[in-house]
Length: 450
Picture (spheres, rainbow, N blue to C red):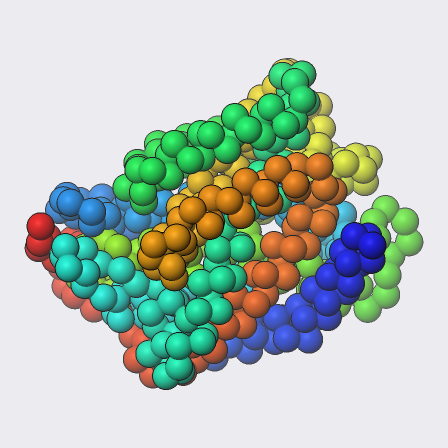
């Protein structure tokens, strides 16, 4: 019975992404790119300058997030196992050309995420204690004029925020690395998540601001070493990527499919999943910051997607392609471990630890966003209901095939993308893309009340 349910869910996910999800990303992303005159490319130096100047913003007090802490709290959610394992797994299914469509998704989809955060900040509410709250649960009601879209968002966000795929991967890899039952590692992992969540976005931002740069530097450095060692193979790999991305015929052997439609479908899906395009949690986090300029804060999301896609995702794909592990290793969770293991010792310990830290940041960020949403939705009982659901879902999917878990995440992610894109479209005329509107290079923050 469960097998049939998952098969039906997988078929529904494939259909919805192929015929609705991909058109939303491509057409809406192209529209925003045209409207903004390709601001994500044209003004990238200014966007990078915004990122640098965010470090010098005035320190926030109370419950307000510092702009750079909001950035790291947000990137803690997108910079996770999806950038390493899920993307490499997509290559096994859709072929090397999948990465091309992941790049396209990142470039045009970055403006969907920019718009989501811009609207969240510009339409946020001030609470009685002087703090800010924003996100789709607020702007959907403004955009559509009815309560049910915001209610539906809260329900979907609470489901999506229990990140069963990455929780499953972390619990299983940790179990393999230290040789204990995965239910033990799952319980330990969940306890740490709850501990950090109690500190809210501020604590998550603090931890992510330390972990994320270190993890990215170490990982990209190791992969770069492998790529340099295999530099003679890179031109051939690039040719395979281009051929696979635009092929109208399936290749024989090696991977499940390589038609253009297959590569596009999985590239867009994994691009949305790894960058969290249209999901809405970034809007919730950034809306709590005390920054004045919605344009400047939202522009950080474009830089976030650049780091996420063109540093971590791309290096992960090139790694498994040049080492040929995408064909040799059938277990998607071990692709990167097998590839690095050919060049570095102790990868059986290092990679599970590395992925656990990545997954920890993502699962914790989402869990906190889910708790935030649940308490907004049902102020009195929302938190307790969310905790109960999280325990049941996490502990159940520890024993389920990870492909089933990512299928559920992708399906709910599609629903969030469709719902939030509707709201953004309705409010599209209120979006400003003047990422460098002010002459000042510093981030300005609102005075804090309370």
